[in-house]
Length: 218
Image (tube, rainbow, N blue to C red; front, side):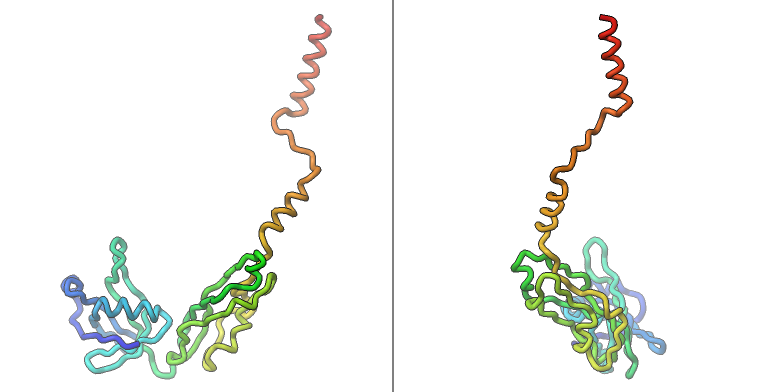
């Protein structure tokens, strides 16, 4: 994705916003550049890239490969107020979270199984140009009791990627129908003596004693 930016003098952010421009900064260990970008163009680009995908930020003819590091939002209007772009150094690996998307209906769901999605991201260290946009997982083969772990999809990551998560962690699984669990709990409770709440043994003894004294008086 490509995004156009213009250099700016630090300060004057309110005036930029009134013109539909978004103040931003481009930085790394050797760079600190104040820029502004078109708010609508940034919003459209950011919806596609998020914080894990590379943007080619063109600043007055110079192109900087960047990642969005932080977006400051207006809490009431939910409109971006300022953006921090991290400029990538060639050959430098980055730690990123790759979005996991799930497609299709698991076979076990057709038998009333419950789909349990446990993770929607995989953390990797990878060269900037190899950052995958997402990782799509087909759910259709999963039967009840089946699961997909992070280790099952490692081979689909770029060759330069290093996995940062435990491969044994579960991404998604199909659980047995809840109805079966409820029926088992109900069957386990059949025949059990109901618990009586209220009268204690001491109170019961007192009442019995009271009945006897009434009989004696009569």
